[in-house]
Length: 191
View 1 (cartoon, rainbow, N blue to C red):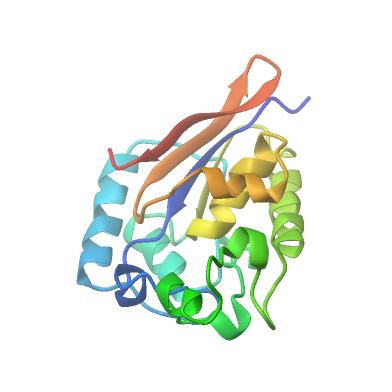
View 2 (cartoon, rainbow, N blue to C red):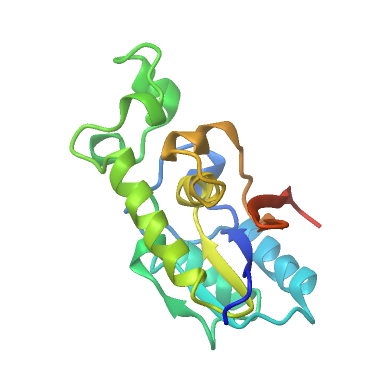
């Protein structure tokens, strides 16, 4: 019998684009020096923790964070954990987008020639399905929007529920249970 898994989420460390608030989906941007230092600090925070399964996005910034945190040798690359594909808005800031589309919000308005919110939600559901088959603790290394959407889906909200939680770079969050109810038990913690 599979017990209720506990899921730890780690958003990747800072990149030059994340610092500039650029939408970074499919672009394979590396961590900057601060991001690498923060990823190593995550490793110190996670030292001594046991995980029965470690999954990571295939994008470099998540892979680097995973490796620098000390889990690269056992992580399984999972394409469903890649970040939202922002299409024509890739590399742009919200302010740059709003200059042409006033009031734009990624969760409400999406991205032309990009991935739909429903598609990102489906990918999150696939990850959750795999997690719930694990008897133990799971660690995920991924990106801001996919992890926010995954958290919303974990607590049975629609994908747009991810708009209600903010996730900083190089932070830890934990998804678990309140008795039989899926819950967010820790969010956006740097230590």
